[in-house]
Image 1 (cartoon, rainbow, N blue to C red):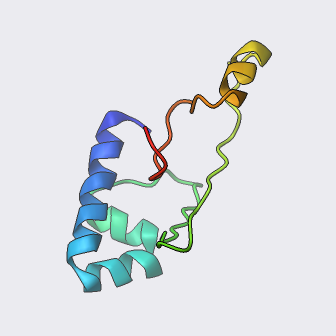
Image 2: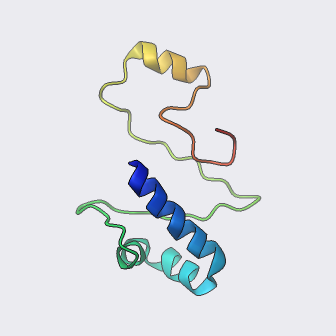
Length: 91
């Protein structure tokens, strides 16, 4: 994600936390709700939205970057998130 996309997603998340009706729309139709907020979902991309709770956490397995070497992968396996972790577990 780009910095601009991160900011746009952050605004959508904040709005969902503050507005139950918006949250319901977002959960029911993520792509449509994002589009209505000015956040484009690229054509051909299927968007899945899940809600984490205190007892349910989501682990996202991103695609392996083409430019990630085995040495890079070995460093990541040691616990360094790449490019970064967006969950509540830490930085």
